[in-house]
Image 1 (cartoon, rainbow, N blue to C red):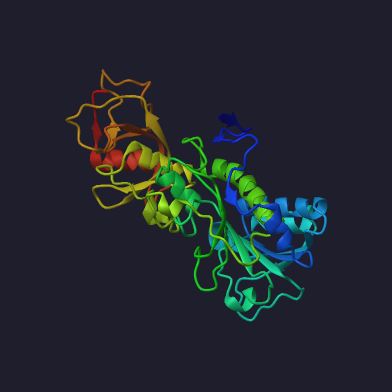
Image 2 (image 1 turned 30 degrees about the vertical axis):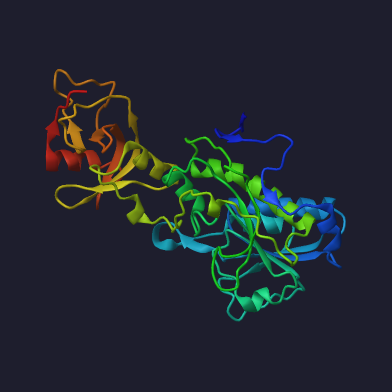
Length: 369
């Protein structure tokens, strides 16, 4: 059943059933109840991790004897903007310190750092740093991680980006233990049920974060309530044996946003924009053209037209202003679809300078649409 969020996201919701698989029997919970409430060191950074932190804070206030304390570790502010003159705090800093009024620890490396408060569980969500064995061994119950994919598929730092880029039919959440020697190699304690979570294929990165963040937080709290993190651990992951694709979700850099129109489909290019990337291509003279704003044009181009970019001839008597107006470019993609480039910038030029540069290099051309 599809439901609608305030944001333009639709996702599969299973009404009264668990949306994930984990150890939840009452007998197991009773037999493994820890002797003391949890003293958590939460390591996070972004909006996805904030959702889990808020769920933990709510559980601390509303579930008796589950959580005694939550300390938050986050990365320091990073220089940004022109000339790197501004400092931008990670999003979780304000939420942890001001909204939830939790103790915070600013670290950019675990080397030489030890928490100055007693902890018995470490939880890392979208943190970006590997939690070493020295730190894990300080916690009686070691560590947990909330990962927004159906592990082992999309291991790595950018699973949500690759869910969109690779157009996975389903999204998912996995709660795993923190492995002492590698990322995303722990025991799976909870995982979204088969076949995964349905989502709107037009979702942007922010849409997926807003949808999956609270789902991941709920799964995490359920793992804590069920004591599934206490040995003996049971691996409940199902995806590894499903026959589905297993790919690495590497960091998405500028190289990943390059567009070769002879190979990239219209969906490939638009997916780059959905993950906050900026697609770019190379002109015949070797200069880079950044496509700052683009969308699909609802037209069909003749099959004899080669894939690539062109500057429309706006003075041609058969030019259709409804398709492309002044200072806009068009491109045929590998699938035959047409991309309307509403704003572009050429290497070394001002924002919006792309049209003039393309016209100078390639001239204008009329293509029947």
